[in-house]
Image 1 (cartoon, helix red, strand yellow):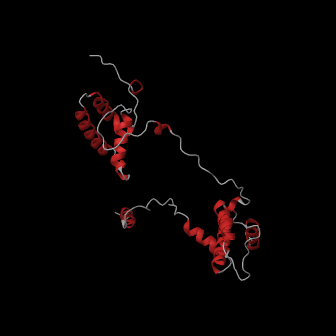
Image 2: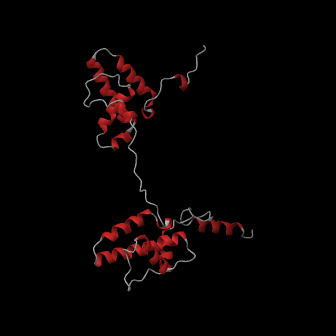
Image 3: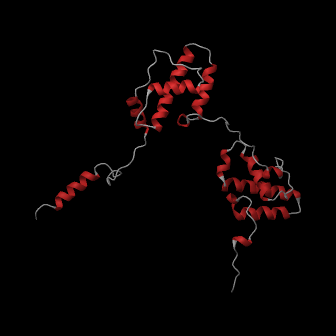
Length: 225
């Protein structure tokens, strides 16, 4: 008996693939029911099935509302039932997200990053005092860390101090008693933060005692008979 093969290209479009084609068929059939009460009862059953098939939806706050929204979307907004939630506006699906605004100011020293520039702007507005001094000291040391990430070969504390003055337009100056964190200390801290890389040792992930036992077996094979 010859049966014609069915390809996905000839099937109906999948509105939300996570629920599968069978759920879409169930919803399509539900739309054809003439009795409104039966349609509503079947729709509630389908929503429960959708919750089982896509449990990640339950991680959201009002997941039931989201499931009903998905039901109406899969039904192409042609399902008329007594739902606990109103269907979402069809136009909301094609609405474009709001344009994100980006900081349009040019960074003079890109190796420090934009956040440092913003921190310096805020620090300039701080009133003079111990709190401002502590903030400026922290910014200066962070600038040195950022500089070392960009250039490990050489770093000059006077250069960092000069860059701080330029970025703050003369609004921030280090106290004469301030001392930068030593370069070796910063490099050691950065080295500790690096992820551990597994070497070529084949026995790295073997259970404890395996290597020793294997060595003993190897020595046993080499004993004279």
